Structures are given as structure tokens and as C-alpha cells.
Image 1: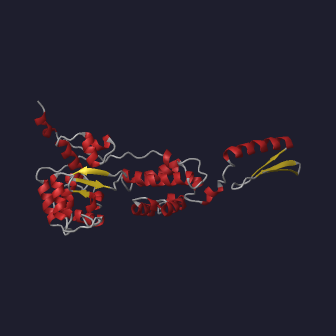
Image 2 (image 1 turned 90 degrees about the vertical axis):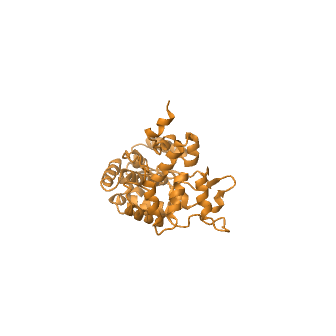
Image 3 (image 1 turned 60 degrees about the vertical axis):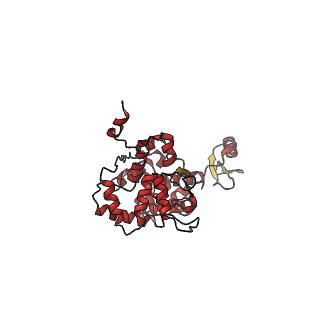
Length: 330
């Protein structure tokens, strides 16, 4: 609805639409005022009136993160970790920046400051939270944000490719240290991980209902990338499970009834009491993938077991040794 009236020798126009702030402008002639009204109303019919950007002066990046934490994070499988990450983000000076003053330059400065304290991979994970929060604000919550600075800033490069494998004699050291662990599940988890290439979180979620002993397969309903998979089990992997099965297990009963924090703590103690330099729990997955290739499995077959959907990422987990291939050459 438009209102045109003459005041103090000028023609004042106000265009109003429900749900949007009024637009006001003054003209020297009534004709110019009417032309402007027709243009604005036509635009309003197609796109709606321009949003009130004053709200961006009142809201900060921290306000956005808090709403995102309360409404979006709980819908994710990694809700607890993301909530903890946002708690850290709220302590940074960037969280006090009004959305109207958020620029690529400020985001880049924040990125560079964080790189002095944490690794590039961790910085990228933080930037991903900011980036998605801004996208939700723009497309779901209707905030009048014209562009997302976090999508425009360059992400730091991550150089975290690893090639660590168990060297001759190291498995015996690792097994002996696991045997001495106060956590009675760690050794079986480590052995099972090497036999299946499963991630630590996937192993901890295995239930007896997931095992098909007759087919010698294991169903993994919850994975890191969100795609369930069913994997074949080696005879050793199956024997590890059967050795742990109680007489009458319930379907929902966990095969490895311990927590991720307990396993992390046990692993730190294991690494502290044995000579395995620069060896991480996740390296067990690298070891398993490489062993599958050494057995002669094809890329699709190994991908089915490991759950990799990107061949390039799968090859990063593969660390074949030249000496192990000599026997295959003429």
C-alpha cells in the first residue's frame, strides 16, 4: 500500500507491506513520486520489499552461534562435540562482532589468529561451524545477510596425510601393553579394528543384533559419513566377537561395553608405557586398509569394507611397501 502527500513543497511517499519495514522517499514532483511508487510496488510483487538491515546491527556473531547451538546442533549425531566447540567459539572476539560489521577481512584475521594456536584442520572445523550457522541464518531464519564471509575466505591447507604402519615387532609390543591395560575391552577392540578397518566410534557402537554369524557379516548402521554399510568378517574378526558373546545376549547389548573417553584414556596410558613412536589409534585403520590391499582385494572391495566413498581418500589410507610387491613382479 502506497501513500502520497504533499508537505513543505515536496511530495512524500511511503510504501508499506506487511512483514517488511516501510520505505519512504521525497520528490519534487508528483509524477516522479508516482513513477517511483509503481516501480517499488512492482518489485515488491516479485521479490518483496527490502528487508530491514537494522537487525544486523543488533545481532552479533555470538547471538547467531547461540541460536544455532540451541536449534540446529541437537539435530546432529555429533551434537555434544559441536556444542563444546561452540562454547570455545563464543570466547573469541569475533563472537562480539555485529553481523552488519562482519567482513571477509575480519574472518581472515580471525583465521590467522587461530592458526597460531591450533592446527589447520581444527581451524577448518571451526570455520565450518561459522559457515553453516550463517547459511542457516540466511536461508532458514530469514536474516537479511547478503553474503556469507565464511564461504569467501580461503581455508588453510591441511597437511595431515600419514603413512604410519606397524613395523616388525611393534604389534607384539602393542599387544603386550594392551594386555596390561586396566580397561578389559581395549585389546579386543584393537585386534578387531585391525581385522575390520572400522573406526573407534563404529566399534564402540557394535551390538549383537548387528552380527550375522551364518553369513559372517557385520552391519554398521551408524557411520561417520552417514551411510550404513555391511562388511564381511575375517575368520579372526568373527572369532574375536564369538569369544566375547555371553550365553544369552540381548540384541541391543553392546559387544564392547565401554565409552570413548575410557578408551582414549586407556590408549594414552598404553602409548606411555610402550615404545611406539608417533602411533595413533586411527593408524589401526590405515594398517587394516593396507593389509586388505596386500591380500589382493580390489579398490571397490576394500571401499565396501572401509566405507570410503571417495577413491582419493581411500588411497590416502593405503601404505603399500615396495618390498612387499617384489614377489608379484616377474
